Length: 334
Image (cartoon, rainbow, N blue to C red; front, side, top):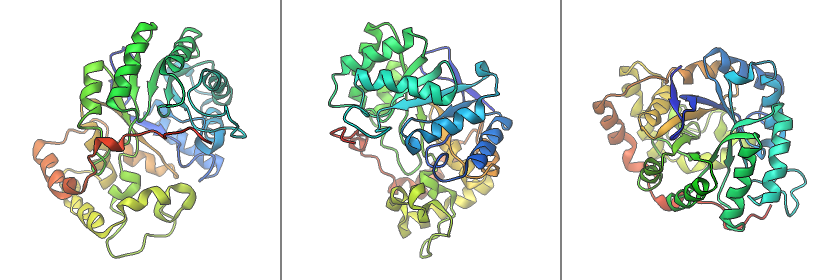
């Protein structure tokens, strides 16, 4: 496993982060989820990402149980706050001081730890003054409940405003967690340049475009049973944007590129996002332990310029690049 610094800090994370968004607490049984965490640890992954909203807090509980016997100092545990949790009442979501301060305590209890390494604002909250949000994060850092603060899916301007306030309040905003893949490149035009300027890294999710870049979906054929595209609880709705014959045919053109590079299709997809120097880590998930070893094979891979050009020639014309696609909900209704 290779490691990279997260933002302008001395904090290192594994190039591959294990995430349990669509699996633990909802899609797979807890014992299988624990096996996946064990497989991640065995493969050298030390960084784990979750959120209180995943499976309405159950994902944090599963991760905490799976990691409870590990040396805490050897792990980097990330979680997030914003989405609705609990009974989803009027204050059970957003980035208000009330929700943040209550949520960190719940997350620590479920994760069975005294602190998280990175606490992230899961989306931007248009209904709470940014000063209130950042002050709450500053207090959590001073209380020792989080070592670092990050955000997820914030625009370039939101990152600039949040970073400025964090400096004024005596802490540092060091990361952003956006969607990023060969097919979803919306951060490249504005978010990445702003982040490089500010000293903020990307921790990217869905580097395999919800599994489409694995190559298992074929044009003109129904999705195989048991895959994400057929699982309503596992992200079937989200993957639909890519289940078009032109996209699926283009993805098939990546197969010889991966083979010549000595990589599997998932490894090529994960390695591709890691070529961006502003990306500190790529989040991968798993519903079976054996999937972890494949993803980890992308760590430390260097793709030559010719390979990157061939990838662009194959799928670049179909990629979403509109910066306006980086967005948070206009309201925080549960």
